[in-house]
Length: 183
Image 1 (cartoon, one colour):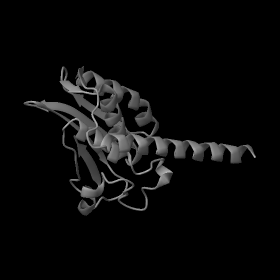
Image 2 (cartoon, helix red, strand yellow):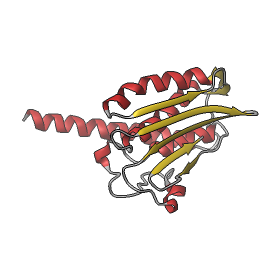
Image 3 (cartoon, helix red, strand yellow):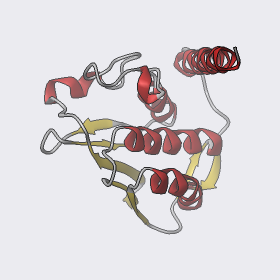
Image 4 (cartoon, one colour):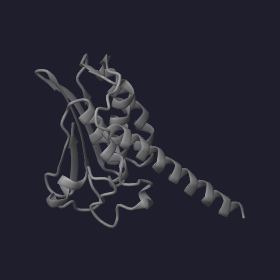
């Protein structure tokens, strides 16, 4: 009976998280939705988020390689940028093979900040799938299912956050056995 209750609690939490994420995504996509934006230390926020993922990476035997250019400042929502960085790192960690590498890079070119997260993948990614990875509930193959703990909306939320910050987000693969997101 205790095991059944644990399963019920787990499924209830998953449904609650899904509902909260869908509400958040709907609000972000509403016409005219704006976030309170302030001038913020983007480099520091990204570095802090990376630090919080080091334990997860170590638990999965992943090499987390980070290159954060210092003193990049952005006008935006610190909470949304933390969530964006977390989503991208979490996605990379979920779909990287044990012993793989996740690389995160923050740099700037002229007036734009560029955040890139890249990782090897356990399954091959078809280039035809790349335009759809930001669609709600889209999965590139059957192996990307609820067993990974996701719902298929994390990258949709990432895109909404980037859109609200008037940025661009793209997905890429170099060999089909890797995956990168640049925002």
